[in-house]
Length: 104
Image 1: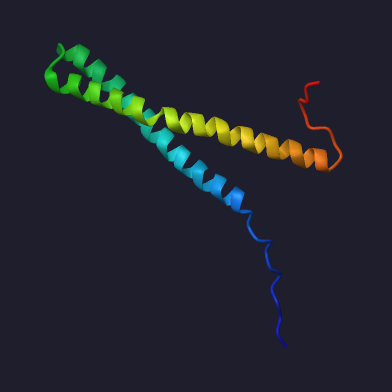
Image 2: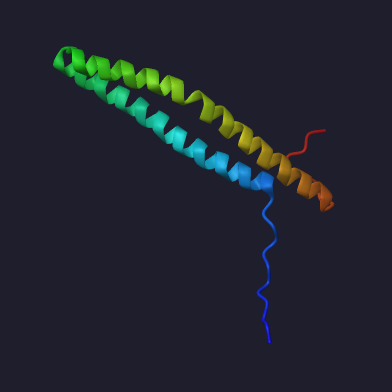
């Protein structure tokens, strides 16, 4: 006798893609904010030490890196949250209930 395990429903490709994008967004935000923190710490060190070349260079490089890295994951994060909110509202409409926070 062959017993069959219940099969899980196939994963929604859109949800899977959103999850992958969300992981990359979290990683990029952490990197960007870490670079920003490094820039602040290096600036404080430079200010205390009388602005030697190395801490000033670290400050500038970290600040430029944060400015390059951070905008994209911030915007993508907003887009992901908006898409999730739209999906929740669509499910609520299909279920016959009014979505929370509907404007009329």
